[in-house]
Image (tube, rainbow, N blue to C red):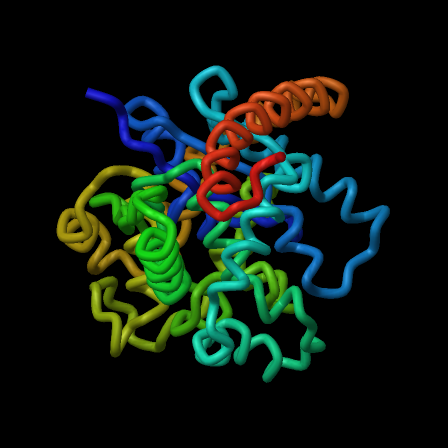
Length: 328
C-alpha cells in the first residue's frame, strides 16, 4: 500500500520557539517514519510583510538549520526552500483564478494582521491561495495543523473540489492531521494567548536555542496567580495550567501525576522542575545545531530543491494538460 503524503511548512520569521516545537515540529519528526513527508521553509509566505533582505537571507538559513537540528532528515523527507520550486507559484496562480474574492474576504488571519497595522497587499490577501498550492502541489493527503490554520485548510479542500469538478479528479482532498500528542503552548506573559514570535515581549516565549540560564529565567518569570496550589484549571489558573502541559509534554508524565507530585510544593519549586524538563528536552537540539554549518545547509537545501522541482514538475504537467496549458 502506497504511503500517504504529509505536507507542512515553517516561515523563516525569527527564532523558533517552544510552542512551535512542542505543538508541531516534534510531531513532524515522528511523521517521517510513517508517511511520505514533504517539509519546506515557506519563504514566499514570509515576504508578505515588510522585511530586511540581508537579515531575511540569514533567517532562511537559520530556519533550515533549526529544522535539521530538531530532527528533520533529508534522507527521509523532501526538504527544501519554497522559493526554489517555481511550481508553487504557478499552481497558486491557477488556483487563484478559481478563488472567489468573497472567500478571501472572510479569512480571519488576513483581517487580524491588517487590524494590527500590517499594510494590506495582494500577497497578504492571497496568502491562503499560495498555502493551498503548497499542499496540493504534491498531492498531499494529510496536513498537520493547529486551530489557527483550520480555515485555510478548509479553503484548500474547497479549491481541490472546485478544480476536480471542473477538470477531473486530479487532487486528493487533504485532511487535517491532529496528532494525539500535541501541545498548545501559551505565552508566559499572557497565558490566555498562544506563544508567538511576533510578541514584542521576549520573556513571553522560550526559544529552542535559548541557553539553559535564559530558559530558567523566562520560566521563573512566567505569569501565574496568587494561589500557591499547583493544579490544572485553564479558567482559574491559566499560567500554571500552561506550565503543567509543557512539563507533561516534555517528560511524558500525565498532568494528574504532576499535580500529585507538585500540588503542595509551591510555585518556586514547580517552576524549577518545569525549567529542568524544558532544558533537558531542548539540549539535543542545541547540540545538533552547533554541529551544522551554513555551507552544509546550502548543500542540503540545493539537493532538496532539485528533488522537489523534479517531483513537483511531474505533478504539474498533469495540471497543465487538464487546464489547456500544456506545451504545444
